[in-house]
Amino acid sequence: DAGVTQSPTHLIKTRGQQVTLRCSPISGHKSVSWYQQVLGQGPQFIFQYYEKEERGRGNFPDRFSARQFPNYSSELNVNALLLGDSALYLCASSATGGNYGYTFGSGTRLTVV
Amino acid sequence: GENVEQHPSTLSVQEGDSAVIKCTYSDSASNYFPWYKQELGKGPQLIIDIRSNVGEKKDQRIAVTLNKTAKHFSLHITETQPEDSAVYFCAAPMNTGFQKLVFGTGTRLLVSP
Image (cartoon, rainbow over all chains, first blue to last red; front, side):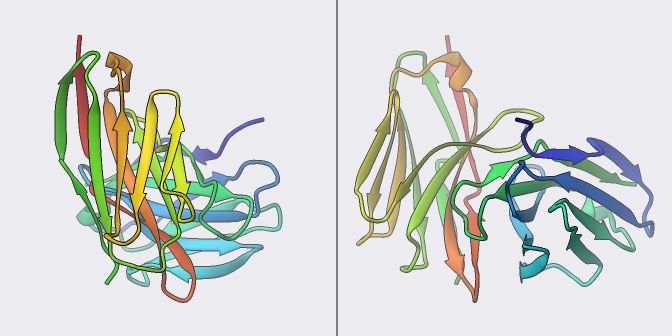
């Protein structure tokens, strides 16, 4: 079975632009969580979705939004990009809405110039 | 508050030695403590986890211990090998109306041949 897949793997954007990152969870997993990992730090929670509904949101501005589709895949959108948004964006899936059995994808490396 | 402290930030050992990484969490309701290994260019990979109803769990060369009273948990790697070199993260769930994983700041482990 395929693991958690994220696309694209790398992305370069200009300040002020918008970006959409995509995630496909492990087959059968209904929960997707998004994390931001700045270089040299641990992952920071952004969003959690379960059964297509937002379960929770971290301390990120409204420029960050996400959604989950009927097939449980998910998109993370970031508007009005800032230099500080440069990071590795990680998607994690789990079978239920809890934290047990998180499996992470390899992430999307976003660079804002 | 939501906080997971991790130390040391870097750890250098000789092949065959043991390595210990320690974490402290703040939410006394936390009941699940995973450890992740992150290699360069990859997402975090779950290597071992422990639930609050046990004090220790082993898996070959890796063990995790938990002291709920002190709110400490530790990762122990014995007979280290060069391929153990990576960044290790501890995490704990924080309940803020829903459960999210809060990560430590990471430990860079270098195992020298």
